[in-house]
Length: 100
Image (cartoon, helix red, strand yellow):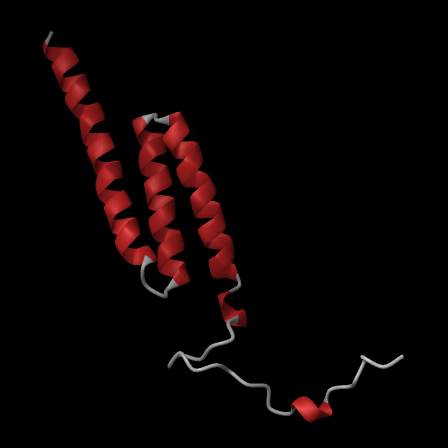
């Protein structure tokens, strides 16, 4: 009986760890740092994997894959660190391909 209680508490701890990581993910994802969001999403997925919760793991893994693919394209952002749009230096120099 004692082992059942210990096993239950261990599983509850994993689930509560995943819940804590979910809350952290929610906080981080409201920011503008895509790499931090990616890392937080991976932690959530790993917590569900450790807890043996397959359905929640699959959902969290998909979310992590999406967040991490977004983070990969971060260098191609169109805004600077101050949030202002980055404008091309010389738009007039581009060829006009609209005429046939």
